Amino acid sequence: MNKSLQKVFEYHETTKHAKNRYARSLGYMDWATQPDPFRVYNGTKTIKLPLAITNPTPPYHLLDAELPSAPVLKESISQLLQFSMGLAAWKESGGSSWAVRCNASSGNLHPTEAYLVLPSLLQEQKSKSSLYHYKPKEHALEELASFETSFWEQLPENSFIVGLSSISWREVWKYGERAFRYTQLDAGHAWQAFTVSAKMLGWKVTRLDSVCDEEISALLGLNQKERFFEDENPDMLFVISQENIDPRLHIEELLSNIPLTFEGIANRLSPSMQKWDIIPAIEEATLEPQIPQPSTLKSEITRAPSRESKEVVLNRRSVHVMQKELSTITKEQFHTMLFSILDSQDAKENSTHLVIFVHQVQDYESGLYVLVRNFRDKDDLVKEMDEKFSWTHTEFEHLYLLQSGDFRVISKAVSCSQDIASDGAFSLGMLCNFVSQIEMFGAHRYKELYWECGAMGQQLYLEATSMGLSGTGIGCFLDDDMHKLLGLKNNRFQILYHFTVGRGYVDNRIMTKPAY
Image 1 (cartoon, rainbow, N blue to C red):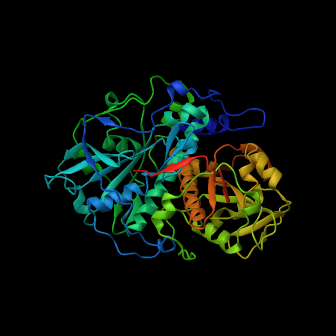
Image 2: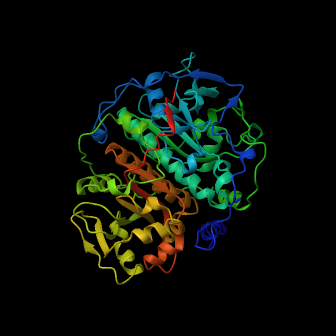
Image 3: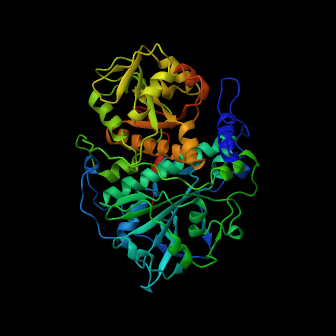
């Protein structure tokens, strides 16, 4: 086994939570070093974007239909950003205020940053392309570099690139060693937020799977260490276009045209930082080039009529308390949510399955279920999981009942004793084909598995919101207690993320104000 793979498996084992030993963190909130949630590049030209709040958007239930493509203009790019990475609202309570964004984030800490590489759409010099950083607080773009390139000639007209990066310190500040997991989940949340926002405009999102982290870092200027106080690491690049494109697109020509040094110095996010050696070690281990995954076909989703898609996106919230007596959902709602995440978010083969605690779903008996998202893994799941499980097929094609019974106490216990896991309609754990995927596709695959889980989490948030329900990601769970419950005795399959759906309690003591 090579060193990078060994570091990945060691990191994953080290950062598991257990009843008597949680993954190491500072243990308290060091408010003096709380990171600034907003990245700014000082000394750059800023382009203020027009707000899109009054723009009409398609009904949410039609987003998977073939919608007409909006023209690629300053106004449509503004809408793409506002309804993906922009602010949804400001909250105020007890003299404190904080922003809520369209993309979900662990602890509302938002490690993910967004960049755009645009052809001459916003340039006075129409022959030049530019790299921009998105400022969600001001809903503006900061110009970091401009250059001439013929790169766009190989793409459909008006295509452009979005890059995502992560500042893991924002999560490390609170969560310590486990923070890398949450940082990658948030990259997945952001990826799916862009996918949904692009659908509102009739645009396609294609993640480039032949681009390595070193190339992304060079394109976004993240390798220019003298411009940064805290490390900012590359995550992914995707092309946004009015047409589907080949995900194997290479960017060497684009890289050959960018300047050696960009404009702007990144703001310092904290006066000082805790040092956790395990974080840079896992970041370095997963910098290996990604290996493209097999492609698969996507299914069509049928949803009940719903409100405008922008209203769904802007009203997505995490909740801390479920209204137990009001959290029953219909079978149709349950099926719609499962169907929405049945396919991979980027037309690649699924590697994640859902282990579901059903508590309050009409026409379903309470119990433990599994949603098999890739039948490639079914025989292995049956073999690896508890031999007492019945694997009774339900009317939903990919869903199996493993064991009937009331699992509310157990679901709460494995989610770090959080009531939200037991008081909703259902909660779930995302069970990944773990070892074989990482051994087959390399250490970078560890991040990609979390991206897949985060993308599904963002989608479940939106599906629940569209139905007037609430969803919440749960990052704190007892890893091996959950594995033991399933009868898993090795790390062939691993749980990477928990999630719950029900009807959340709204605390009226917290005031909501407009985002902009």
